[in-house]
Image (cartoon, rainbow, N blue to C red; front, side, top):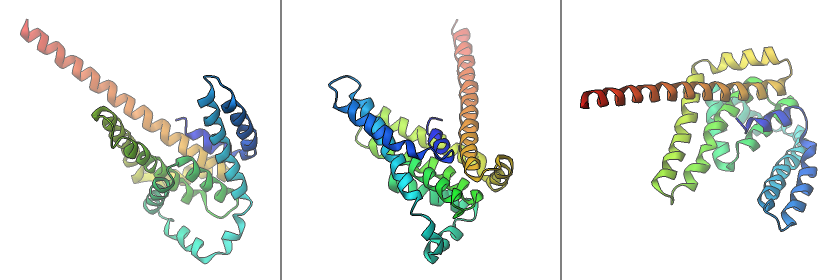
Length: 220
C-alpha cells in the first residue's frame, strides 16, 4: 500500500519536492545519530522525484519519435501493458520509477491512462524481482517470504486481469483527471488485493483452528 504514495505525489504534480528531501536527507545522513539511515532514505526518495521532475521537461519530443509511438501501440492491450510494466520494473528494480514515468507520460498526453494503468499493475509484479534476487543466498525463511511476495502480487493480477480493460476505462471516466486515474487505479488494485488476501488468510486460519480442535477432541 505504501508504494502507492508515489503515484499520488506525481499525479498531484508534487515532483518539485525532490530537492527539499535531497538536502534534508543529506544533512540528516551527515549527523552521527541513529537517524542516519532515515536520512539516506529521504535522500534517495527526493532523488527519485528530482529525476522525474527533470524527465518531465524532456518528454514532449518523444511524441515525434516513431520508435516510441510503436512501443506504446504494442502496449495498447491490457496483457501487453502488464508485460511491459513487469519487464521494465524488473529491469530498473523500482515500481516507483515505472509508475512515475507512466503518470508523467499521461499528464503530457503522450500515453492514454487506459494504457498506463495496465503498465502500473504490471509494475507491481515486476517489483517482486528485487526480493527474489536479494533472497537467493539467504535462509529458507527469507526465500519463502520472497516467493510469498510474488504469489501475493500474482494473485492480485489474476484477480483483475479478466476485466482490466474495463476497469481502466471505468477509473478514467470516474476520476476525470488522467493522472489521478492512474493513481486511483493503483490504490484500488492494492486495496482489493490486500483485503482479498487477508480474508483468505483469516478463513485459512479458522480452518486450521477447526482441524486442531477436532484432533484434540479425538485424542481426548
